[in-house]
Image (cartoon, rainbow over all chains, first blue to last red; front, top):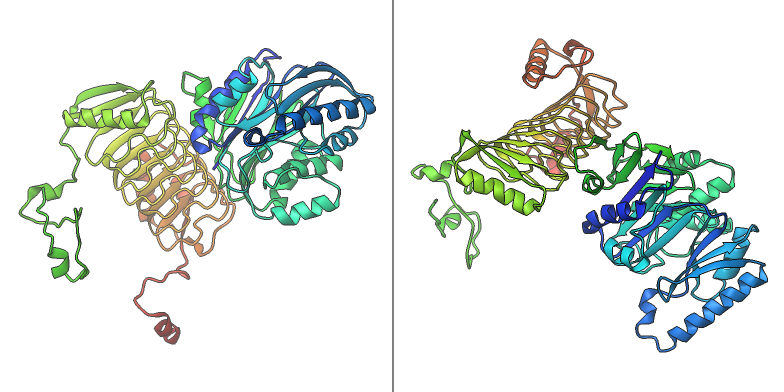
Length: 312
Length: 280
């Protein structure tokens, strides 16, 4: 089933506590999928790149005797490869043993760097961006938020996902959001099933795109990246996806300045939208949006094949 | 309570296996007045009022509290702060005036037979699913599968509604003040749908019977949905229904378009497929 949420503040600058807001929205949708929870939130641009990555799956820490040494080895290799590329690591944070956050000074080719780092065994880059913080892990929103200290996160906008696994495993690799590799600051969350996943995946792989999981939702992120690579803006790429993707879906995409929503031509997956003067909030169910308001609000369901993009 | 007659179904030739354990099978008897009402329906007085503050309550607790008030004979209930919760106001099987001061989530007011419900907000997916009788009036918008499989009563949304409105509708009247999404009237079997605004793609797809009236533009018609001829009776019917709920057709009732089933998919006869081939 899965639940997705999005929020964008139009006038709040960097002061809105979107971490807490998204946690309350995602927790309200826990019944739509408790397997994993993910956030893609956009905070202040520090001028550096933020790289979120994992060096192992959470489950690997249990039942593997040499995993701790392996993780240390992988981190050392990452550091040496970053140094080899001339990347300066400004700040390191490790919310968990397997998930890490590096703030780096780098103005070179992101794809080249990402490919070099992901060449290391079990290492997956979750996101790279100037303001994007992509966090995903197993458990509900309360668990993940506490684990990564997200409730104090201030930012302009974000998208989130609570997952009921149907197409692939319950692991971090298959959790949403997906970073639209190799585009800085682009992330996707999806609710639905894509029936032309394998056909399109093979075609995109032949064009040189990389898939990190077996989850059908990743196709959307890769497709958006492919279209933007060919010069489309976000809205054009999303409108193209309505024809390109087969199946039932509602998905959200966020970039550094925008948040977009698309719904399939059958309108088979839910989405409720609140559009206020200062803020737009979207969720699979209104009960999530109501976590932000103690009074009645006007909301609506987007129609079949509809694409909307908002800017902050 | 109706008498449980274990062997009745055998006598009627419904089956011949021996049933064991408890059974819910009950049979109508004109001698027993209880048969004329549902189990768990209540005799309420609409001049008696009650209020529920649902702010800190779960859907189960809200429904339980509504029932507790009905058990006390209270027939005019207002629920404050439902906060878009799902599955609220369901399974009410008697006359009742029920008002929600705010929006409901999914599956609100489903499986009802008799109450007059007023929702002063919006509703999520599948509002009033399987409604048998009564009225449900929503002041704002509604989500998809609005009025799925309703069998009777009036279901009114003064705003716009999502996709598959009135899917599998078997009776009653659905009235929409704004526009509807794709596949409205999908597999409709009976009843009427009045859409004052525009209708999305594939209107009335695979409808077997029933009537759809549209006041605005229709994106396109579904399989076996065809335009019908508006009659004076149609105009009077729509006018009376809209007046009842203080609603207007933006371009006037006379300019509404009527849609019915082309009955190419209609197959309610008793012929076996081989016999049907011979007839055709």
